[in-house]
Length: 96
View 1 (cartoon, helix red, strand yellow):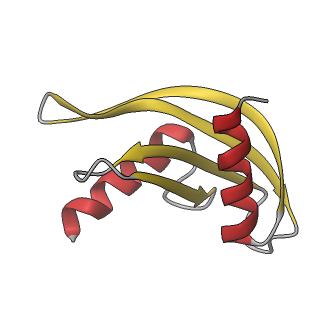
View 2: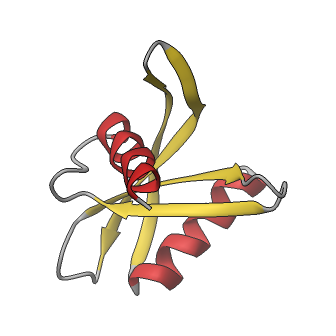
């Protein structure tokens, strides 16, 4: 397991109070009005011990201050796939 995946696994376990097992890495590209707003790899984890979900999506990005941030979203509507998890997160930023 790469250091990146290990850090994301730790973040998932801490944020969602569960045990996580890495399942797969999925490349995702999110566009808005024809422009790429995010491109990267979403790590998919099977989780146990969380009453709300059995899967979690996680990725890392750098904010506008170039600080590293982790995002973890449980598999629950509307985040039902790696692609929809990214879409949901990006849309939430637009609402802020």
